[in-house]
View 1 (cartoon, rainbow, N blue to C red):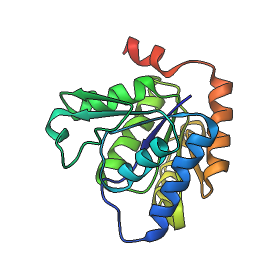
View 2: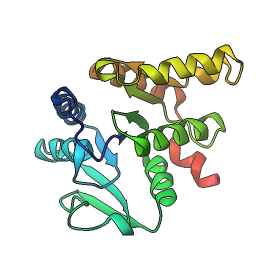
View 3: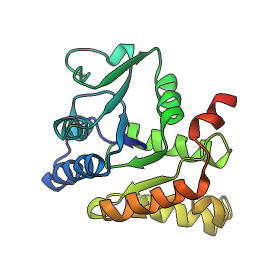
Length: 193
């Protein structure tokens, strides 16, 4: 099972986020899942990857050439793929993912999350998508999603494509159950796109 994690390339200023991201990494190891992520060794993304590696887990990083520097890349990944562009990075990450989870981050994290949601809405992949709403971090996204639904920009089915939880295990369980119900690997959809 490959879990794609989107999260910040910065640490943020809340120690709770760092602790939570370590719990996410440990939960991935405990379940025997593989981490797929953007290949960086900095910020929250670096914490989750190092936690998985320290626990003996498998980590696949996918990083664009312009970010593959000693200051940014985590060269101790089990596998580190270098790609030409951000778009290629996002496409390859989703192509090998079974489940997608967004943790706190900035614009890049939101870009990845919304692109994954859009591609799912368009039928380009079937990966379940969730956000870990640490300390209300994603409350604004919940409000926005509900506003989209209220104003008929998305229907209930599309709105339900985003699973939201405050607890790591609960989120992982829900997304795993959805993945099992879907039964179609993500890569088969994207390879046809």
